Amino acid sequence: MRSASKRLRGAFTLVEVLASIVLLGVGITAAVSALGSIQGSEARLQEKELRLRLASDQMREVLATGELETGNLSGDFANRGLERYRWEVEITASGTENLDRVLVRVTDAQARSDEQATTLETLVYRPPENGVQP
Image 1 (cartoon, one colour):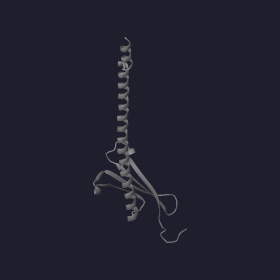
Image 2: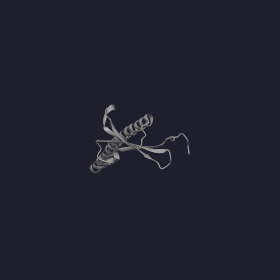
Image 3: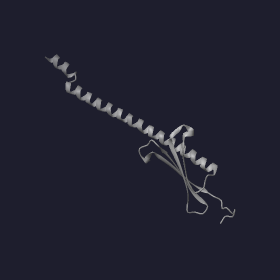
Image 4: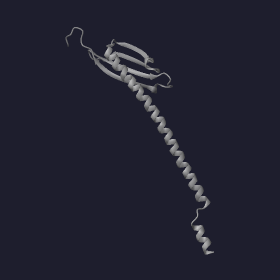
């Protein structure tokens, strides 16, 4: 009788085995869910980085070409094979003499909301036309 009780003490009960399986299942489910969230965040971050690079390139192009007349410009990035992205440039007076505000916004045409837009803004000095500064 004594040897049978010693053998039972070293084994797991059915309840213990079931509890460990449930805990293991919960842990695996949480890990898979976390990995899915990380992948989704990475994809959103890559999209945002692309829009930021496109906006930066468009800002440099506008400033380099001198297309700084007050108003709006717009277009897309089809020449780069990125037809789904659109850009808008808004040039307005800043309220300070000889200083204009340039805003570049890049949006994803396939996005469902405006949160898929990236905006860059800068100020540009425009020398006075008569060459004399106030």
